[in-house]
Length: 191
Image 1 (cartoon, rainbow, N blue to C red):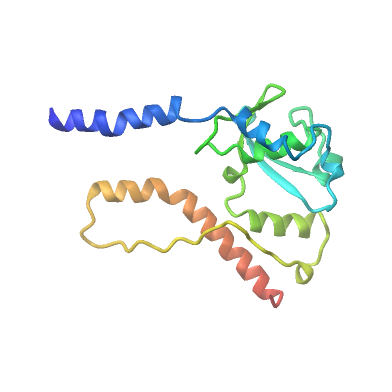
Image 2 (image 1 turned 120 degrees about the horizontal axis):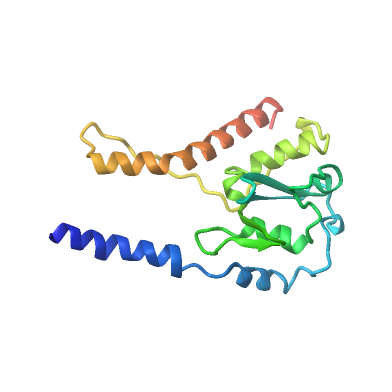
């Protein structure tokens, strides 16, 4: 009985609050972005050709890549690549840790971190594939990412610790694998 109360009081209630009450409406984020990104700007107005923003389209269950190249070349009826620049950045930044999903023209988007666990790796691939930049001419600067120190797994780890590790492993494995692959590619190009 005490354990049931503990689980309900200290685990379930915060989870319910986080899922249903604690997140900000994503329009708060959009309004903040609108203070320095004009509403009428297109991705075509961006000075550089290699700017790319990623988002996850929840309704279509597909990654979305917003860039000059995708806007010009990838026109399909399910994907609106003609969003204003403000909305492209807004959908890419709507992380579910802080904001509810962004809803744009009936489509529901969440942050690009679900698509690009290693944005630097995706930026490299995009510059190489769509921008036709040779690998030896690409320089990568990754700002804001972290490399977590590994947690040592011991032989006497309990069941709850194993469950915690396994449920949190997928995201970290993807990110570290992509970063490793990018590092390998850069080293083969003498970087």
